[in-house]
Amino acid sequence: MSSKESAQDKELLERYRRAGGTEAAEPSEAVRAAILAEGRRVAELRAQKAGGRPFDASRPAANDSRWKLTALGTAGAALLAAFLFAPRLWENAPPAPPVGNAVPPPTLESIHPSPTSSAPLREIVVTQATRENSKSADAASPKHSAPPAPRAWLRRMPLA
Amino acid sequence: MSLAQESDENLMLRFGRGEAAAFEDLYRRHESRVFRYLYRNLRNEAGANDLMQEVWFAVVRNAVDYQPTAKFTTWLFTIAHNRMVDMIRASGRLQSLDAGDSADSDGSSLLDSLAADAKLEPPAEVQSREEAAALLEAVAQLPPEQRSAFLLQAEGELSVEEIAVATGSNFETVKSRLRYARAKLRQLLWDYA
Image (cartoon, rainbow over all chains, first blue to last red; front, top):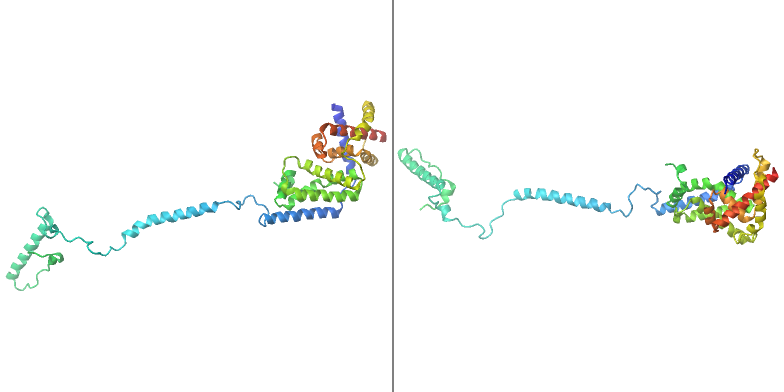
């Protein structure tokens, strides 16, 4: 097609379109209303199928499993909190009551401290000295009637 | 982006998802062109109205399956053309709109003589109302296949390839129909002038 023919074709189309503009060719109002009503009806059906609302691309899809991540996160946080607080609960718990031979009997060492263990020996010596002192004090001053109470563990201790 | 700025293809996809406003916008964009295509082919207002409704109902029904693999207007005018051919066949008013191209044989001698005529170029004076009426009448006088091809180009703004798809014809046949149609219209305009 030559450029002259092409220009003529364009001009012809332009003339046709201008001619078409002079003529009122449009569908009847009834047809237009029927077409638009059908369009609205079908659109409404599709919107209902899609959840009763117009399509919203910003919403997560119905099959999105994001809730699983949320649930997993919550469970993890609860587990961490339990892990952090559990040791404190164990520390504050009352001691378990003795059951059977659970408590070992006192050893000889604990009753008669060995000479190598100086602190209890010293205490015994001091205690005996104190008792002797108190005896001599009793003898010296008969007014001082109440001797000092022996320590609780000494009262229990069978001193030979 | 407002609906007015959306492409035809996007409006169709929106309508397929349930947006009534998208369909209304699309309809108003193409209402006149589709109606003129039908009316000028049928030359019958009642028939054009019936067909108009049928074409757009088909668009509505098929919107959910619509895939923008081609221009929306190619799809729309393919529906319009096929419905029109079906209606014409059903009425028995016309033997052929696409069965063979009788105009090719009828018009070849005319085209040759018209092409040889250097005075074919229509006068460039201001187009009067009478001239517009004469042009529209000339379009109405074209053989059906040529008229349909010319109107698909003029109203649907389809390319030769797209017209071939819409009418189910091959490229060369469509090109030939368009050449004959334009040559005849130029001659008629020249005669009028």
